[in-house]
Length: 147
Image (cartoon, rainbow, N blue to C red; front, side, top):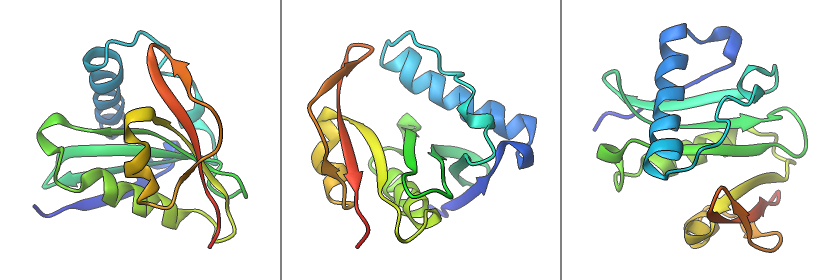
C-alpha cells in the first residue's frame, strides 16, 4: 500500500475531492452506523478547518478533519476509514498527520466512540469527561495535552 496523505482547506479542494470525502463520511457515519444526523454542518467550510485524507493511487482510504487548526484548542473529528482499508494503519497515519498540523502548544480535543478510547489513548489522548450519547452511539470526550 502506497499511502498518500492530502491536506487542504475547503477553498483549495476540488468539488470532486470534497464529494468523495463527504460520501465516505456519509457512508460510514449515516449509513453503516445507522445514524441520521446533519453531516453537512458547515464546519468544513471554515477558514481554520483542514480536510485531510489518505489515498492509494487515487482510491480514497480514509479521512479526518481538523477544526480550529491554528488555535490552542483545535479538534480532530470525522475520523472515517473505508471498510476495505480498515486494519491497515490508515486511521493512525491520518491522526498522526492531523496532530502534526496543530500547534505544538495545542490541547487537541476529540469525541471518540467509547469502544475506541484505548486506541486513541495510544496516540496520547486521555479521557476528559463522562461518556455521552451521540446519535445512539456512546462517545467519550478526550484531550491530548502538549508534551
